[in-house]
Structure formats: C-alpha cells, structure tokens
Image (cartoon, rainbow, N blue to C red; front, side):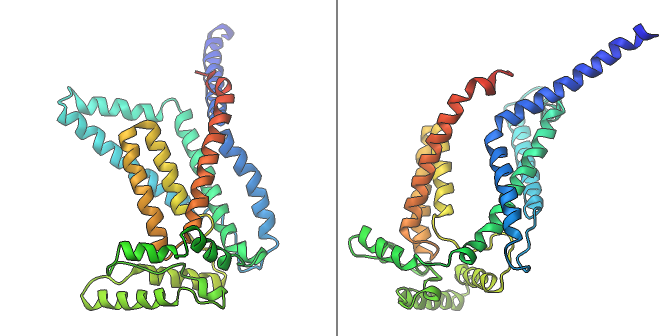
Length: 315
C-alpha cells in the first residue's frame, strides 16, 4: 500500500516544488518593482494617517481598470493571432490557437504570476494617485514663477507657448500652464486663457466639439479645492509624465526595432510640443522628465546586467 502511494506523493511534491520554483523565478525577475511597492506602500499608508480624513486612500483604485485593459489586450491579441493564421493559411488554425492559448495558462505559475503582478501594479498606481494630490499639502506650489522665467531663459526670451502657437496657429490650440494664475499674482498666461475661451466658443459655434482641456482643467482644479482623490486627479506638472512615458516608449521601441523607434521619437516630439501647446506643462517639465527617464533607463540596464545570472539561472 505504501509503495503504491509513494509515486503519487512524489509527483505531487515535485509539482508543488516546480510551482514554488517558478513563482520564485518570477519574483526575482520582477523584484525591482516588488521591492519598490514593498517600500512605498507602508510609507503611503503612514502618510494617509497624517492627512485630513476626507483624503481617503483606496488601494483598489486601478484594479478594475487593469482588469479591463488586460481583457481588451487579450481580445485584440487573440483576434490578431487567429486572423493572421487564417491569412497565412495555417492548417488547423483553431487547434493551433487553442494550443497557443494553453501556453498562457500552463504551467499554473504563469496566470498566478500575472495576477500577482497586476495586483502589485494596481497598488503602485493607487499609491501614486493618492500621493500626487498631497504635494501641495506638504509643500505648497512655489516654483511656477521660477519655471516660467526658466522657460523664457531657455527659449531666448520667449515663452514656449508663443513659439508653438506661432508655428502651429489655428483653432485647435490651448493655453499655457492652466493653473498658473491660481498661485501667482503675475497672470502671465491671461492672454492665452482668453484665446482658449474664444477658440472653444468658435468651435462650438461651428458645430464642433469645444476644447476638452477647459473642462478637464476645471475638473482637476475643483478636485484639488474639494480634496477629492479619484483616478487621474492631482495637479503636479514637474516632471511631465506625458513626456516621460513617451520617451520610455520611444527608447523601448528603438531597442526592439530602429524604424519603429524613429516613429516613436517623432511621437515623443509631438507630445513635448502638445504638452506646452495644450496648457498642461512648462517646457522644462518635459526636459526634466526626459532626462529622468534616460538616467533611469541606464541605471536599470546596469542593475539588470549585474543581476543577469541570478535572473536567468532558472532557465
């Protein structure tokens, strides 16, 4: 009896060991992200105890969003993969599709690792969304005027919006930093705000959609005044996440495919212009953001090379 059950127990133990080994490998592979979350989450929880009660920390802020993104991404991938097999006249495409789908679920460590990573990213994004609106609570906005003058100094005495609006005039334009006049006595962007209002009215009169930036900026300001924390809330221009994400995408695309990288860098250039042209950022916000991404890119590359052996030894 004992000899009959031994192989079963051994197989079960081996499977359990393989699962733990695979999960440990995934942990090592994503350890920088997980360490970052492990450090920032307790700090975020501690911070939530020091702020007014109306500022509530919700650790599940982005869980639904990430679930929807994952579902949509899967549907797009599945559609593309299946129709690609049809167009290339693969034999038995349905069977091949199901076999490919199995590789996403087997071994079981794959879906478990994916869920852990998505939950971890949700926590990281939730931490950021909670902390961003707290910036003025701990350190009131005090550098807008400095960035305004720095912009003019870097661009030979001109504000960047003056350059972009000269090069790209038209109805579909917006203002400089939209919240400048709320924090500084010098209303350096009054002319732009007036232009923004008039252009939005013009678009409405033509039966077109008004400039959506106006309502979005008003919503952000109302959330700031009311102390409301929701997805995408918070006023913080430095550095520009619009530009940093675009730079990161461009560097990644160039690493994978140079031609695709060139397209991504053009897109990044457009984002930098639009971030100023459409009222969201000072030009220096984008410059600092791009510099931070380049530094982090090379730092993480160095860390990955240094830990390459420990990460890949499982393979």
